[in-house]
Length: 432
Ligand code: ATP
Ligand code: MG
Ligand code: MG
Ligand code: MG
Image (cartoon, rainbow, N blue to C red; front, side, top):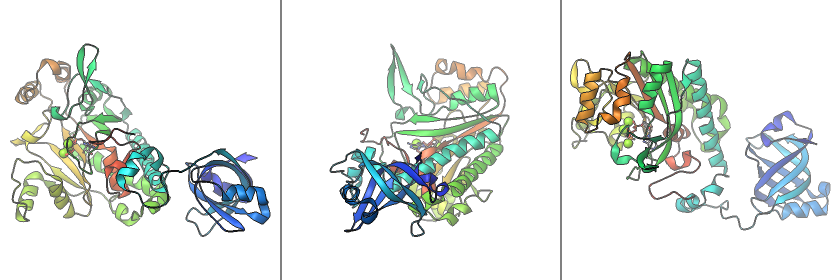
């Protein structure tokens, strides 16, 4: 007997096959039972007809509890009523693992309850759809950067320096020394760009975010390209091309998942049309002040209501360019014509999803960078290796960071970032 997964149904219509699956749900009458089956590849229906299978198998099917694992044998047929399009007419079934009192029933549950049961919640159709889209974005990222001539380089996770905001650092021990969990691989990626030209990393990063928002995780995955001999303008072009590419990949390969999530394809299609609009930080402040945001002034960073308002002025993601030097990281290059802003941009997603990408051109001059390190109250010794990059063939270079879970949340159109990663780490949650 051929063993297949549910997703392979379309190639097996009319054939007798075996499938290993879990019972997601079930309904039955005196003569027929409908099993909602899940095997990780997809969801579909199994039909058990009493007159076909006999009393014993029918009673077994009728008595199956939610999440019991079974092996079923039967014939695949088309099912025009379901979105998936196929079902299995069961001939025989065997219970592999019993399940009793499964806590997540088909009725509504509160978020805290679902979060406590995240290890089981992952089995739902909705979580399945989100993880499929997450997977597609990861695959598309690898494809895109490989096509563009980048190589993947993995920066360390245990580090001795802080790349960004030291208040958000996780401290740990490295034998007798203090160490930190990486907040960003950026500095190492600059070293990698000087060695390999165009590089990208894709790995976990950690930030002790003290505030509860629907956009911040404590542990999240970041994608960080760094490009030698590229100025900030060229980096912006890579960024928008990359975003359009991942969205197109999701549209091409995740139609079913988008449907499960009720995500409008047309809205996403619009985000693949380039270029993305741009606004300068200076103008964004003026725009906000004119529209009732009186409290924000030049020199402040945007909060989420500000980002949302700015994004609402456009129908696509928008780049906000040239932020004040004082609110950005020490390694960003000042604007050549004015010293108070840096050559950087944040890409703000539409629909209130906020900052998706932060990027900049890097300061490449040894003296200027040394000064910046001091201004930021950092010590030169800690950054000696990084400063070396400016001593031996320093070249213009730029890079950016995209938060995977921000992208997943936005592309899925879901409410909260907690559903975009299998096991979210949040301010008050490290379990399960
Ligand atoms: P924010 O302003 O939203 O706090 P940031 O400016 O601190 O973000 P960066 O240091 O620029 O973030 O990191 C690059 C990208 O990583 C961000 O654009 C965002 O997509 C993502 N990111 C940052 N912090 C988090 C977080 N706590 N959880 C999930 N993604 C994050
Ligand atoms: Mg932050
Ligand atoms: Mg920011
Ligand atoms: Mg940022």
